[in-house]
Length: 304
Image 1 (cartoon, rainbow, N blue to C red):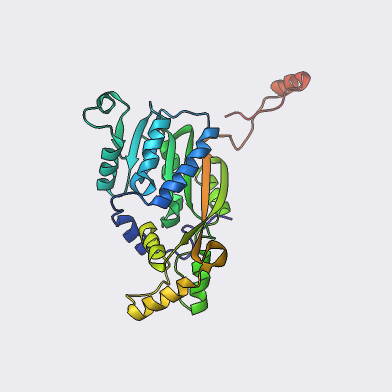
Image 2 (cartoon, helix red, strand yellow):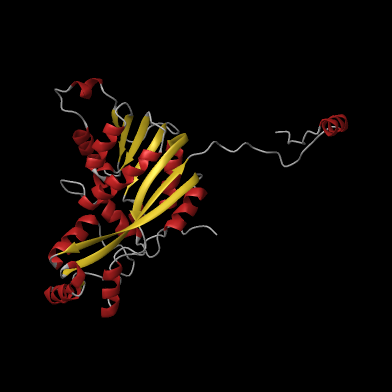
């Protein structure tokens, strides 16, 4: 059974608007934290890429960009983004200063995508859960990678915002976010896109806040409600006051009365395998050849 074409209940128009929304002066701090945890998984990968791609580096994490450049100091880097200005700004941050020799003699930092099949690693952090056509993106990533190159990605999983979803449901309100894709479905989509040996895992991060204002500020920095049946239009001060009361119900005594919100982080890693050899639908073998093979104990193989 094939995986769905887009995350359940995601509004593609709203997703496109969010993709075009300016990120801000810095990458979201939660994205940087997740990128740091994903980098720990690179310790188990022996391949040292000569060329790698950072997909949406500003949203994915500029600190992560610098850390990856230190990990692979001789590798050529490609920065790609739907918003060219963000990719250019990310390159300016990633490059050494003009007076430093590595800016002029170090590895290249390019914009866009390298020629097909030329990258040994593609890095995409905290992006796929907002993508309206994830299978198409996975195919682009597969086409970008060289044989034996690998993909590293992370995104939100279905148990994210559990407390907020339950609070909204108790009020009879529409969901505060679209449904996020399960890691097993991501594994299936990786295989459908041509990847091999997908490795999926997840962890739950619980954040605590002193006030509803701080909680909402972080949520606004990290995304928008992309649910196709979300609240329509603007809501007034009365609703905002009611929302604050609902959020105060997220307080946990064991956390000193702070508001708690959970995030399921899904991590994925997969390889681009050698292309499968074409096998003929019909096997042809001569009688003399069959006799010889039977005497030698050889097996019959297809003529390609």
